[in-house]
Image 1 (cartoon, one colour):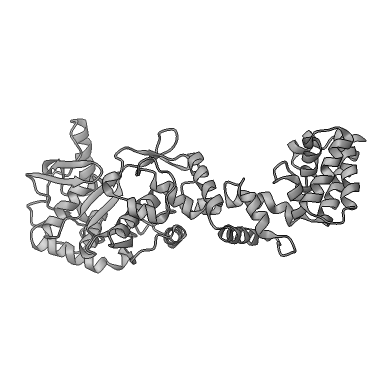
Image 2: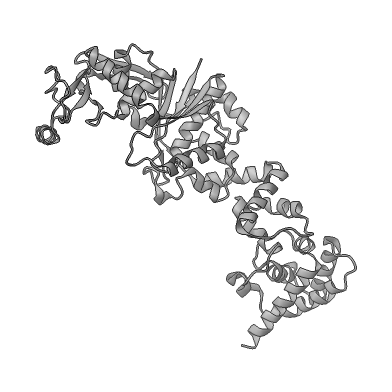
Length: 469
């Protein structure tokens, strides 16, 4: 059975790059009817935090990347790691090393001065040392000194590294805790991981891990090392490019369906197709279609994809998300307004849920001030009389609906000899506070008679006051 794993370290938020790796692992396991494992690599006790663990779990849940197994925590497996370390020592594939940090630093400086690759020189390799009470010792893996480590990478192709290039890495610190390369190997072995998909910053660890797996007589998984994600400027994606944590996009009002769709295209493609349903992603995904060059994160492209989903997802889904956001903001929307119709009108023009909520907030609460640029442009003397006439005609309407409102607005354009924009835009700013809304007759109908008339009167007072000051 195919088995993949996503193994983040809980030292921060779930990064966009990590989320993409998790998605690739999840898709491959789903496509092959295999299993997807979530493993929290929290052996860095100084930097790992419960808050970061929760951030990872929240991000995975928001994206819908549900694991079949886990989350497993490495800190709960220390006894197992110590058991394997002892096994490697007993069978002669690892040894105790008493070299001090000072000696290693001098060795490193000397090698660099001689333009040599810094590496451990095997000083304690054949000494047969045993741990002594009170004497700090690490355990090193006895890497083979001859031959080549070769493996096929599904992204990079054939990879070969001479064992002479690899030194005897530390697999247990002086306090007995395991290092990354040891715990990862034991976990992959014990959890029967068949395919390791991860960032290509780990590719240098792979030959070392393969050698440890061979020493343990374990099956070697297949590997796929995915290139990093870059910003638009070609540099590694970071805070300066905007949000990099997955839940930041949740907070900004992006849709998880759009985020998955965008992430899957960062390093994978299926022809020229841009929009994929989740089922299509699973059906089309393959390791051999992963790109071997770095992908660039483009917020404009993400915005475009998010807007496609804003328009295509079932209206009830969007309505529910808008209600959640309004609840978080403490905005009361429980009145006679046709809520679903408002959302449907505005989602055609909104990139995110947040933008939609910002756009319709005027329907539920009074705004403190007009958009300065919009007011300066249209709430001026030429708009005063048309607005006064609109207030008069609207007040006399028997039926408050778009058709009768539109007829009244047309009558004003004919009476004053002005274009639709000369009355439509002042009305829009008057009742919404800004210059963005659906057609003004629909906007007035949705807002209702009482609110609309009160706001038009307020705009008239605003223009009159402006003219006299």
